[in-house]
Length: 101
Image (tube, rainbow, N blue to C red; front, top):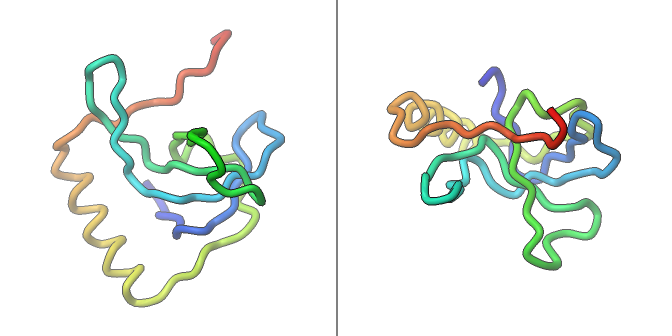
């Protein structure tokens, strides 16, 4: 993972036309009984999380970063801890399954 995007960042996914706001990093996901993680979860922008629709994706699924969320020294500390936890490999990294591929 080259860069960890802050909470509140707005992105557009590959082949997507909706803007998503990042609301979580490394959320765990239950894939038919197998627990793993995606790098990000997001909600529709500007709507916010108005229902149970949460979108899970990884860095390679992002086509464009439209806005970077707020970052300070706490964010930098989090990014260091985040990378260390990912490197431990406690959970497998899941990949977005795109229908028709």
